[in-house]
Amino acid sequence: MKKYVLIASLAVLMGACGEKAEQAAPASEAPKAAEQAQTPATPPAPAPDKAALTEQAKAAVQALGSTLKGELEAAMTAGGPVEAMGICNTKAPEIAKAVSAEKGMEVSRVSLKSRNAKTGVANDWQTKVLNDFETRKTAGEDPATLVYSEVVGNEFRFMKAIPTGAVCLKCHGTDISPAVTAKLTELYPQDKATGYKEGDLRGAFVAVKHF
Ligand code: HEC
Image (cartoon, rainbow, N blue to C red; front, side, top):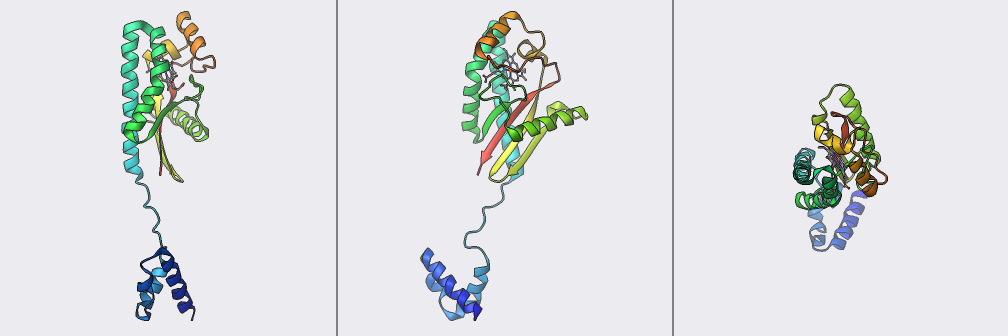
């Protein structure tokens, strides 16, 4: 008896969706229809391929990193750190936007001690990952290989640590020239991104994708 109620309601349901209603009605189709009733009408979305997304994210942050590095080196050679600071200030956000559009993932850079108070501040989960990177580095992992990748709800999250190199110290180190300091104060009154030593974790690249 229960079975027929089920089939009848299935027919109604299918009727609501259109064409398939007639197929569900005949008695001969009943076992099949009952069977179908156990599977959800809309199959769940396929699980995201984390490995493939991780590869995509690695390529995206690699593109962001190498573009930024190229711009930085060119600007440092052409005009020194003060000039390069202005380039970083205007170009870094543009580059992140362009790479995000090209790679189909939202890429950025964050830090526990950020320079750009709008784009560089780590949110809650990013802060956890950055702290975890610090722990892993202290435990002996090579900072250049620290990576995190996870799917949380409908969000894919990727981070890759950014170690501080010698070239970074002119603008992020402990001994910053007065001219650079003046420019920093002008552009980033809330700057926290100084006092780093070579090998410290300066922050991380982030790639995020929603589905
Ligand atoms: C010429 C000065 C200069 C040099 C050299 C420099 N940076 Fe920066 N850095 C900046 C500026 C300016 C910003 C803020 C850019 C913005 O407004 O988006 C910044 C931002 C960042 C951020 C984004 C997070 C935040 O704090 O806002 C990271 C990460 C970063 N730098 C890492 C590095 C690393 C690693 C190096 C060395 C390879 C380096 N920087 C060299 C000036 C510099």
